[in-house]
Length: 151
Figure 1 (cartoon, helix red, strand yellow):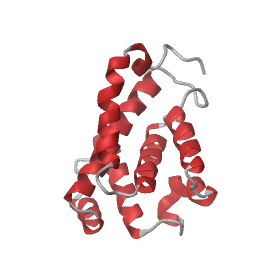
Figure 2: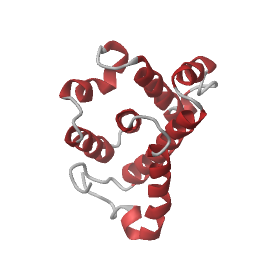
Figure 3: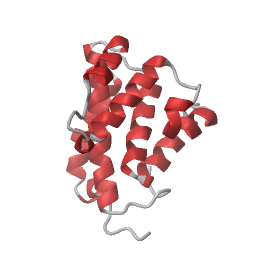
């Protein structure tokens, strides 16, 4: 794969600070960082963003994430490695990422399960992380950022 242009955040570096501020706000809201990282990885898998899947998995591994969990994120429903709270966050990530795929893109059942595990700040953090991930995935997929370069 050939990269089309440099990453838009590199070309327009002033755009990176607001995005980093959103990520920081999400990380400061009390949701475990490992959960936010799982959400980032799953949304990136759904979007086919090799750059974010590769970089996110590498970062998670450096932070101590197990290989079993990393390998199983794409099949989280059938893997025993995730807590109920993480499963709720992953389901939310999939629903929010796939909003165009359904007439009811974030069903009440998905939202309500997430709300059983996370308070309003936690839900806000999850939605922010999912949104920022989708933003970066779109930059990277559109410009064909190559996995393994960067981060």
